[in-house]
Image (tube, rainbow, N blue to C red; front, top):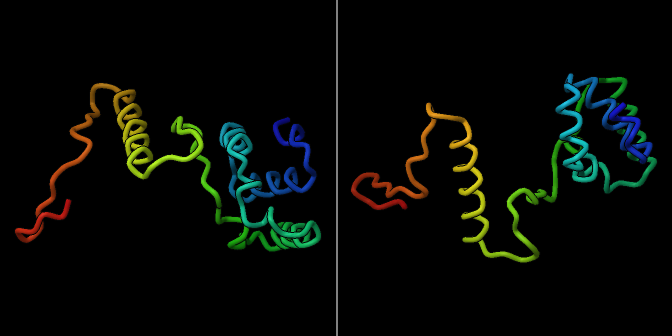
Length: 126
């Protein structure tokens, strides 16, 4: 049912083959579709005929090519950053999400600090 909702025929075939090969659960498939995995793979930037050939090869050989695996660009909408942002803003947003996640895990998890000073061989590496 999840795959049928995908409008693009090639994307549907991509998700079906990846589900078969990687044995994704429905929840994982839903997350991959919502995260636009197909659109973020190098495969989606190729001409339609090449995409069909690569998907056919995947079906026959059960072998992932680099274009099926590598993702670009990374979507970080969950960080709540808008338009352009600094490296510090990105770092702060990532750390905020890690902190939120660990605190949500419960009492057996702890979040010690955002940054810790690291001294290796008497040299400050932070």
